[in-house]
Image (tube, rainbow, N blue to C red; front, side, top):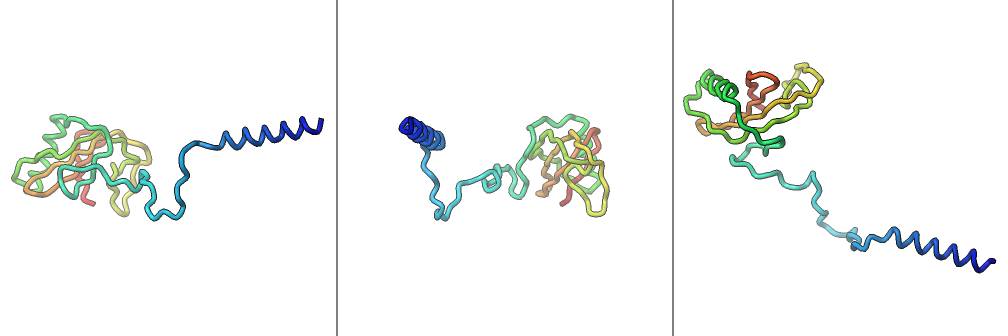
Length: 140
């Protein structure tokens, strides 16, 4: 009876150890180069140097929003026609549309909107839209 209990215990230990084995080699803890993680991977390439890579879903800019961007740029004295760099649908975390200004308060609710990056006269402009067609220029 004692032999059966010992044999059963050994089988259970062997099964437990084999269940932990993955077959993959263990990483060398002394390795100087860690495996890339989501936070250490380089960002996606953009078409314009210095512009943050898009993070939302690519989208077409509705005519009303494009016209609002052209009007805003004209009001800023930009004479060149804007060239689209990227446009994406984004869910912003709050009413700041991802571009909070110091000392301002914002609605603390997610907002479905759009981020449109354009270039004109060699300058990049990052516009944000919430529910409407009024652009907010993000200058940070």
